[in-house]
Image (cartoon, rainbow, N blue to C red; front, side, top):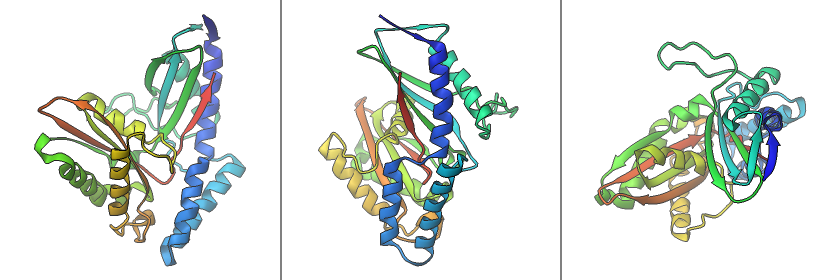
Amino acid sequence: MKIIKSTAIIAAVEKLCADANFELPRDVVDALNESVKKESGTAKVILEEILKNSEIAKEEKIPLCQDTGTANFFIDLGKDIVIDGGSIYDAVNKGVSAGYKNGYLRKSVVADPLERKNTDDNTPANIYIDIVEGDKIEITFMPKGGGSENASALKMLQPSDGWNGVKKFILDIVKDKGKNACPPLVVGVGIGGDFACVGQMAKRALLREIGSENKDPYYGEKEKELLEEINKLNIGAMGLGGNTTALAVFINAKPCHIASLPAAVNIQCHSCRRKTVII
């Protein structure tokens, strides 16, 4: 068994919170640069401004967006690990608290959804843990802004609706809400499972690198189909028109009950922030 001190997790998470909010992933920057080549007029100017913003944020160590989001963690926890000094949940939340306070990141979490009193340190984080083989901890952090999260949706479709029903649901959500989510978007889709897990599947889909291929060729073709249809909507960068409404569409699918067809859309804004560390 390998012993990892909780203090090491706290320090790693604190750094993740700052780094992910200050620097846009390379694949997102590359996709935005490719999109500039396809645009003209206002759309081109907006995309160039988005890229300039990312350069300034990286150089000056300031947030890419004033909305530094809820803290989402996807953790692969090796089964041959013992954490010394407390639970991994406590360690992650302590890291978030330190990261958001010391990094001067906006705290956006309220302790109760109706009373609306801010927790003042952006905790608690949303923590999703998978137990895997090995003696390492892989922690992926995704800060998720409120605007893009509010543009997301879940629907329990009828099995008879099939792919056409799922596709219509996704396109309707993007048409209705996409312009409010600071496009160009990354669209995460979950299909199958049940009510409790399909939303998480859609959110987890946002962790894929832009340009990566779906492991299932069938869904790879569906991703291309949806991306093409979404980019015909003329929503464009920041909702002001153009050829680039979305940079990517990613689908996660899972077995489901014979009477069900759950589908979820989790939309991400152009500030598609995510970062991984291995301890």
